[in-house]
Amino acid sequence: MPISELPLLTAHELGDLIRSGAVSPDEARAALQERIERVESQVQAFMTVLPPEDSAPSNAQGPLSGVPGALKDNMCTRGVRTTCSSKILHNWVPPYDACVTEKLRDAGMALVGKTNMDEFAMGSSTENSGFHPTHNPWNLKCVPGGSSGGSAAAVAAGEAFFALGSDTGGSIRQPASFCGVVGMKPTYGRVSRYGLVAFASSLDQIGPLTKDVTDCALVMNAIAGHDPRDSTSVPMPVPDYTQSLKSDVKGLRIGKPVEYFGAGTEPAVREAVDRSIDQLAAAGAEVVEVSLPHTEYALPVYYLVAPSECSSNLARFDGVRYGHRTAQDVDMIDMFLKTRDEGFGPEVKRRIMLGTYALSAGYYDAYYLKAGKVRSLIARDFQRAWEKVDILLTPTSPTVAFEIGAKANDPMQMYLSDICTIPVNLAGIPALSLPCGFQDGLPIGLQMIAKPFAEETLLRAAFSYEQMNDWHKQRPRI
Image (cartoon, rainbow, N blue to C red; front, side, top):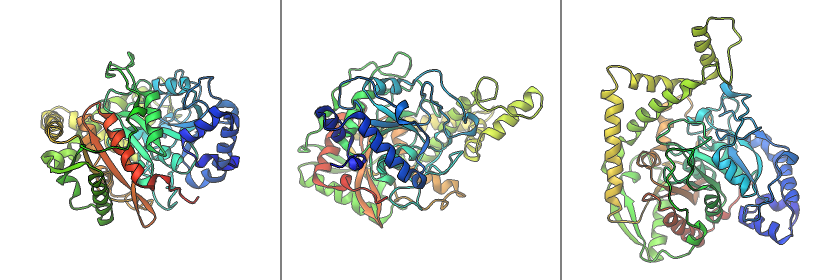
């Protein structure tokens, strides 16, 4: 294979070549650098690209050793700037690595760079970056989804063999759907959040974006596990997720929740997901219709819980300890105000104000407390569903990728992009998106949802579906 074609391979294919001696890590990194130089000006997936000499892998011997990967720019990287795509952190260089950064370095990953995102992970299109939008490799006029749009676009465009994203309300799965890659949000607590710059602490979870399900399992093997530095990290043994990669769905009980196929779902999306469910049924899975009646409340609950936690978490960015500080000669209070006004973008300001209002005296019980109670009802719906089924299948997004600017001035329409993914975060359960078709040349995503810590079930079902199709083998012509 010509070295120039290496970036089109999956991570596990490249890893096999490296271990066999057919390709060296340096050759793989050089080929990727050439690819980045050729397409990055069109895609704009990265905030920071490291020179090859600064991204050398460790001496680890494993499936990801020497394989170049990327990290969303809200995960700390010692000595490499971490901006959260916000002007308030435009030159901040962390003094430590996030847990996932450590784990991937230990696994032998060669770090390519840090990917663009919606500022502080607040958005569904990566248009809210404080620096530049990212473009969808399948159609450069369209968004890649968000907030992990840079990671998804980098993988789809062949600028990274895999990447990590963070998912607060769909921010891994929705861009995976828009960019035609695989994205998994693990169970809350399965992957350490230590070193992840927090947006909404009870919702955030780190996960992989990859070219296929096998790569997803390999990255999960590397990043999952207990971390005492994260109080929400669950002390459970981590299975070898690659053992789940079996093409067998006989006896698997699949639930089709009626609430996820309603108004607003594009016909082509509905047809692709229905076709996928029929394929799995033909392979021996049992399909039943289920109801999650409180799904309709997920969006308003999320937009009370997430902004409230964001209002608290982002209070630390005040110009005193790190990050941007206003250059204007003002007193301390004005320094706080001007620093935050200059440093935060419009969407971040909008969510801080929403959260501050919901937490304010006289409104806490009416809004935040009530949202917490309804959140419990949403989680209970899923618990009842697990009594009947093993996994749920839904669209990842009700639409395919939309044009850049199409929803920029309509926050409500933008928020509706995550209507199928948000309930999963509120319940803290795992879910995976993988490609299941195309509409007008743009990928469609199939979402699989499972009970807590049942990532193995998701990988088994996703791998089985993948073997029946070749959607994951399609590459954008860029």
